[in-house]
Amino acid sequence: MGARRRSFARVQFRAEIRSEAGYPLFVNGRYNALAETVSFSLIHRSTGRVYGLDLGADHHNPTCVNLGEKHKHRWTDRYADKEAYVPDDITAAPNKPVEIWRQFCLEAKITHTGVMDTPPAVHDDFGL
Image 1 (cartoon, rainbow, N blue to C red):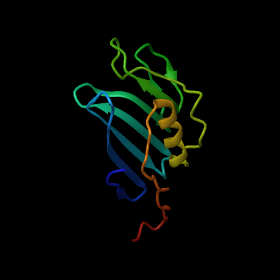
Image 2 (cartoon, rainbow, N blue to C red; image 1 turned 45 degrees about the horizontal axis):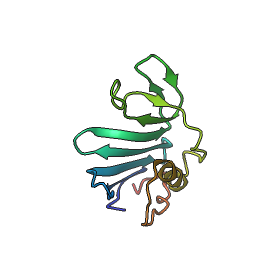
Image 3 (cartoon, rainbow, N blue to C red; image 1 turned 60 degrees about the horizontal axis):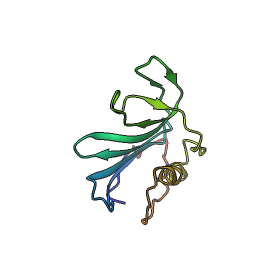
Image 4 (tube, rainbow, N blue to C red; image 1 turned 135 degrees about the vertical axis):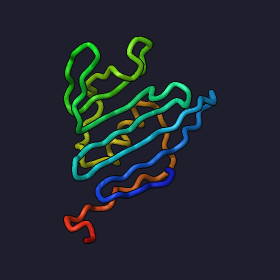
């Protein structure tokens, strides 16, 4: 699944996507256990984010519609990746990033053949 980096409560990854059509795609994932935020983004190398899921942070659409803390972004010619919608298919809680990843992959038609481990527990003392 690529390299993971941990900075206190944050874990992130980046992985290449292989497609039969050869599209230059990769996926970025971020999880912050303390803030309970999760983000998965499908990125085209020349266009930018073409599809994404965010949990734990509100979003304001260009049409002045405010969305809640669970929303997906889909590329459109008019708004690029700035317009989002509230999905019905993401039912896992923000503190369950592995389950959210499974649900994201299912809807985005991504076949993940690797292993995504549950992020390590966060300790209050941060090793100080």
